[in-house]
Image (cartoon, rainbow, N blue to C red; front, side, top):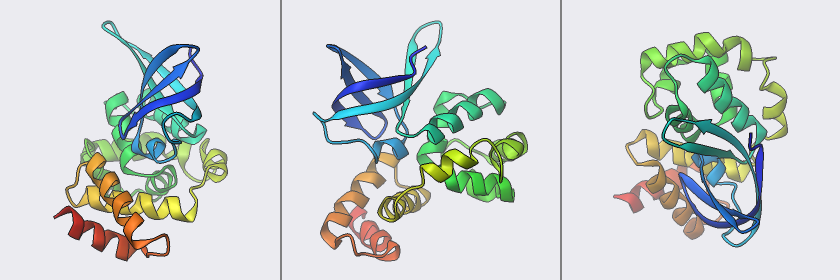
Length: 201
């Protein structure tokens, strides 16, 4: 099993990163939450991985925090009907902290807003993960250690707001980053979302 890759970031998109390790390039599928934490291309990077072996391919999934990888593994190994693609969508559409809160509070509506997650799937997530990622669950300590900074949380919340309003994940991320560069770090979440909506229309 490949536990992590430690090398140089060659290129990155909101859904995929290419990392060179010892002269070998690895394509790693990543959630939007991990893309936000990647360094600039050409910089060293360490990314945690999970290998999925299929009949036609070996696919590496990458995560910048242990909490993200643990949640990915819980989703694909515990919740029936959720494969790696949907699990990655979930991590791209909601933070670990927010998902833990939604599961603990039985918030079907919040989970249903994530791309690829309908009401029934959201209900299954809550039922099958409640004892694992709610208060005191296995993700409690990891989430505390890997809490987002205030700026990261604001960017993430703005991206999620745009996705909920119909933006594609990559488009939402690019729009928010561009808008924040214009407004400056002192912009509020509301200002960031409003300006991003104007820019994206």
